[in-house]
Image (tube, rainbow, N blue to C red):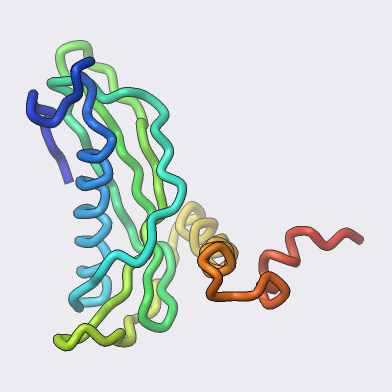
Length: 159
């Protein structure tokens, strides 16, 4: 997804407002989840949105979203955000985040989604880490007891 940063999108320092960036990220991630599942999707969680550099008025913003892993009805989506200053020819990665979406039927009930099959080395790494990130989300939300988070516990087991 590509957007141009216009005056109504900026704060008093002429930087893209964080809330506007999160809005764009949510849309891009929802499109990726909807295309993967061919279902209506709703945002379930947003993890760790990092704001590395400011995006300036007039920059072109490119959001790249991909489903990293699908569980029964939920999908983790990874998003990278790039800002480009066309006149100067500079481009930089400014944001990154993980969103979770749940596919729902017409009544709003969760519905199964197809498996995500990683192909590249990067996709495989994101896929492999998705279960740990999911368990962390569930523990932090109080929906899983830490002792049940086997993937997380394995990170801390020493030989």
